[in-house]
Image 1 (cartoon, rainbow, N blue to C red):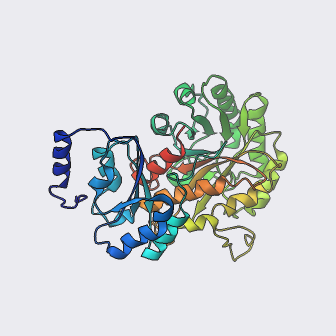
Image 2 (image 1 turned 90 degrees about the horizontal axis):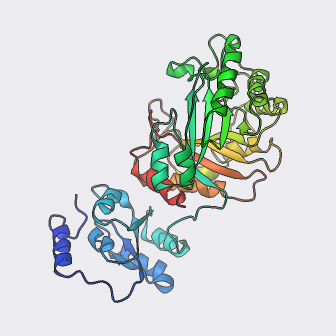
Length: 423
C-alpha cells in the first residue's frame, strides 16, 4: 500500500520527524488539503489552484502523509478520485492519522475538478438537516444500534422483527439515550422468497399475531415508533396460498392500533413498483383510506444503479399500469407521498441502489467504493428538500447485515452515515 511520496519509507520518515520534534503549531488554524491521486499531472494541480485558490487557499499535493500530518484541531482532506490509490484510503487515515476529516471528489477531467471545487461548500459536506435523520435498516437487530450510538447518534434505527405469535420484550434505551430514534417493524415472519412464511399472518393466526404485537409494544422500552407488516402488496410477503388485500392489511393494522393507543404507529409499507394484484398506487390509496389513524408513513425507495444522479432522475416506466411511476427514488416515493394527508411525516425505511452495474440477476448489492458514499449523501440531500408537502424525517440505508446489501463492513457507506448522523 503506497500512500506517501515513497511508499516504502514515507510513513517511517514522518514518524521519525515527529519523534525528534513534537512542537505544536504557532497558532491553531484550519487546514484543507486537496490530495491528488498517483500519476496526476500538473494540469490537475493547476485545476485546484483555478478552482479554489482565490476563495479558500487550499493546500494541494500528492502525499497522503503530508495531507494527514499536523497537530491541528481542524484537518480536512479532499481526496480526488480516491479509487486510483492502490489501497483503502479511509482505512489509511483512520489507522495513521486519526481525527482528520476526509471528503471525496470524483472528477473525470481537471476542468471538472476545478468546477466542483469552485462550487463546493466551505464545510465537509451537507450539514444534518433539521428534523431529518440518516438511518440503517437492521433486521433482527444485529448490531447497527451499537454502531450508531458510537458513530452517528443523530440517526434512526429501523429494526424489522418476525415475531409470529410470540411477544417480545425489547429494550432500546441505550439507543434512545444516545440520541438515536428507533422504529420497530413487527411482522409475522420473513418473505417467502427467503424461505419464510410471509410477513403477514395467515388468516387463522391473525388474532395471535395481533396479540403478540400489542404485548410487544406494551412491554418494550426506548422505541419511538412501530410499523406493522411489510410491502403488503407484494405476493412474496403473503402467507402461503393466501392473498393480502388492502382490506386485510388495514384490518391487521387497525386491530393492533385499537389495543395500542398513545404510540406512534404506521401501517405496512408497499412495494413502489409492484402491480401483481393491482397498481401499487391504487393499493396504497385503498390501504390508507381504510386505516383508522397513523402518526407517520413508511415508504420504500431505490435507485437502479450505483450512480448518485439517479436520485434526481425523471425516468418513468413505459408500460401500463405504471406509466405514472418513477423508476428511481426520490420520484417513486414522492408519487405515493402525494396520496397521504398533507403534513404527515414520512420515513423511508429502505433505500439502496439495486444493481451494481446493470439489471443482471446476481449483480445486486452496494458497491464498495466512493460511489456508495456519494449515493447516500445525494439521497439525504434530496430528502432534505423542504418543498415537499410531507416532511421526510429519516432515510434508512438497507441494510446492516445479512445479504448483498450489507453495509456493516462498507467503510464508504459508514463514513457517509457517520457524517450525516453527527449530533
